[in-house]
Length: 89
Image 1 (tube, rainbow, N blue to C red):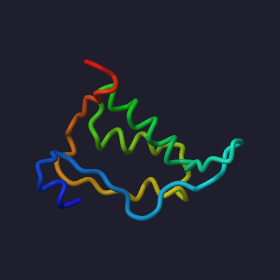
Image 2 (image 1 turned 90 degrees about the horizontal axis):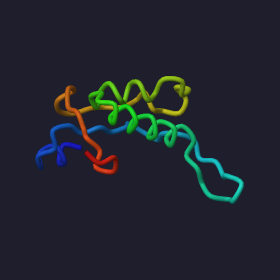
Image 3 (image 1 turned 45 degrees about the horizontal axis):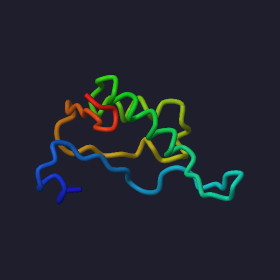
Image 4 (image 1 turned 30 degrees about the vertical axis):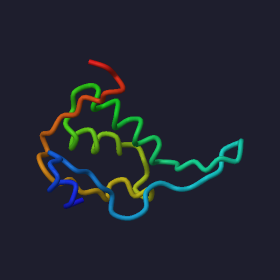
């Protein structure tokens, strides 16, 4: 985390410990429940213009604390906004 920040990242987000729970879907693929839901919501909130801090917090709403998504750390500016490239301009 520190290394990424020292290399010029404005904001770095990490989780402390394991997140989600590993389960198998109908096809036998490993799915990380909680983490996938959080990631989808997180990117949607960023797309809507929320800061990294706001998006991380809001994405965790409704996901049980046992999934570990509340145990996160943000280094850098909490006001950083990200414009995901996959959504275009």
